Image (cartoon, rainbow, N blue to C red; front, top):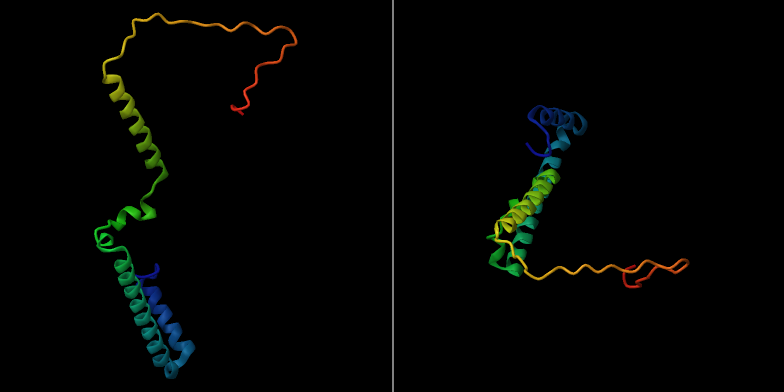
Length: 125
């Protein structure tokens, strides 16, 4: 039903409402509730129409299920991201390797003298 209330709970609430409010005031409160529900529906419809006017017809084509936060499972998101990275790496590995025929130059820096401070790069920190 609505708000997680099943039929038996709704029946218990109705009986409690009859007992607490009494048969004299119950029709008055029921009509107020009906007016409230109608007003809320009218407000929701008005908001939807205003949104459609401001955004345009693109809103009608939108798939709202994609934006449902209940569908986001962190485990699935991580798994998909890892598989995407694996697929990218696999496709890169299938490409022909580029072989360079130039010799590789290995440069070694000279060791620091005793009590010489280590080089400091101010942009790296």
